[in-house]
Image (tube, rainbow, N blue to C red; front, side, top):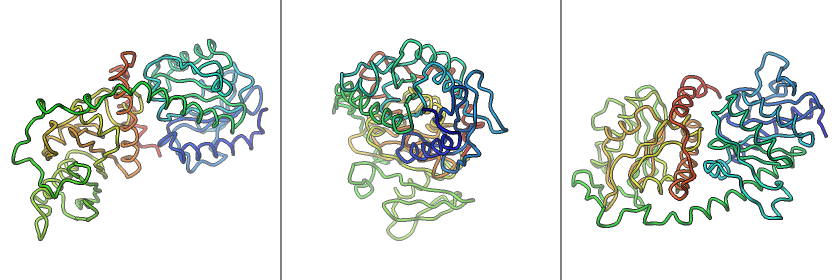
Length: 410
């Protein structure tokens, strides 16, 4: 059943809110559409945040040739939606997400076989379209080819990119998305069972002794065993650092930012890490992130290339790791952390998670979210030889596009 145009636009807006609320997308990634006839559908606009969309922002597009009404451009991937509606008359609602487990499993480039119960919701299998750069004609061709070869399937992995869910209506599309995520979570967990502790932690023979001057004082190590690098934001030359639930304010030019009372040398070192990063980057927020998968991968003391293209965009072409695994957590110098970041938005600190940055709180949280997903993919790649990262030249294009234009979209 096709929707009326007004009904379709309202449902697309509702779907956008739901995707953000349930963490299936960040920023303006992903896109949503609804069929209004055999000839037309409506779709989210290009580069606009979901929270503030109105019906006037939703674009009406012709299935046959992707022509659209009005001055607002449709999503850059509207061609994929058009191809779905052309090939599948039973589909009336399409949701493209970057949901976590399905996006991570997509790096293997393999179809997912299903149980008989799962087939009732998802079709014979979950096919995987070959990789194409986001929003490119190549991606559209690859998805169209996979659609042709997978008649009746209601979901699809887009390798190194995300997910396509094709429902008979709004509710069905989200049911498919939820079921698909459960299937992919089980798949991921079964494949990463072999990600043994030995791969995460160096043996005693390989542990590097920390230099005396960089070892953390006992009171500066939190309960999880990390040096807490804190979180901060900057306004003008004034930095506000939150560390162990205490707030410190100092100038970016201060050589001893924290120097009175109970404040110790290592607190000054942490403050100077933030100062050094702000000196070299046009950002406003810094977070020390200790999400589980980020910490796991930081324990390998190795960087990695992006396996998912939104990581290439928002984090960078390579995730670097600074420092060595020590017998106990120790400080990395401000210069080393700043060099590790370079022009990226995140850097791993050996055994201690990552420093994530951004131009706003929203940007920094998005960096942390995408890095956590990227680290999940890196763990999967350590267990499966079929995993492939985003090609280097594509990762560079994705990063350039993000810095020059996409990061400015809200």
